[in-house]
Length: 282
Image 1: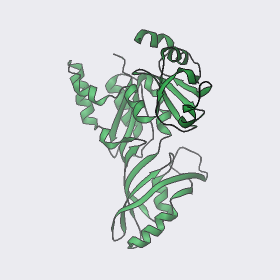
Image 2 (image 1 turned 90 degrees about the vertical axis):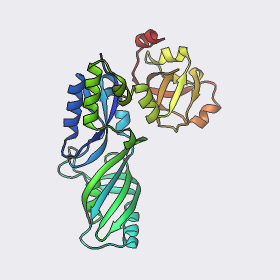
Image 3 (image 1 turned 135 degrees about the vertical axis):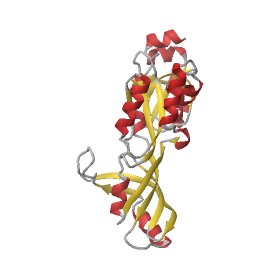
Image 4 (image 1 turned 180 degrees about the vertical axis):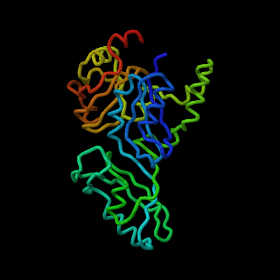
């Protein structure tokens, strides 16, 4: 069987993201890829795609990331001190990637959407941070005058840790599947249809538009039956009934769409089901 879909892994500490991804690929005997690398000493949500769904990972990577961690300061801190300090690091910040990172070590702008203290004990602060992709939490802690002691990613975009599964459970699910018992695996492996609905706003097409888009056409207004709210520049998922077709980038927002009768709505970015594949499913 060719596997196509996503598994949200609860990455343990002391393992590289690439190690976990390779392990999943071997278990399923297929190619696998991940979105949003976690350091070896960081645990939490690691979306892994199998088979054809690997081509959809770029739409996962750009999502906001949410973390819970502990930062240790060299001195005891008060609630008012932390509130004042954290407020200076919310919004647009300048950050230089650490030496161990694989990207250029040049200052760059990143956005911290949320940064708040959950608990303070002497010189340690348990915090929550929601940040733009590519933001280094360890560097953020250092820039604030502290040192990151522990970190867990609890969310990637709308995908939170309630969907994450440990490696042992995945191993058991695969063994059960090989013995003709697919129930556990079916609860773990998320089809692209369900995952992309969770991840992006959805637009539902009529049959004619679905066939055109699956053949590489742009998305035009007459082909749309219904849709979720979206903004200009958002990635949106294309569906024909319950079949996921691909992803486009919106040229307008959903409010403008209400008053349109014709014209371009989105430029197609990725086709997941080709026209011939779609015809077979109809």
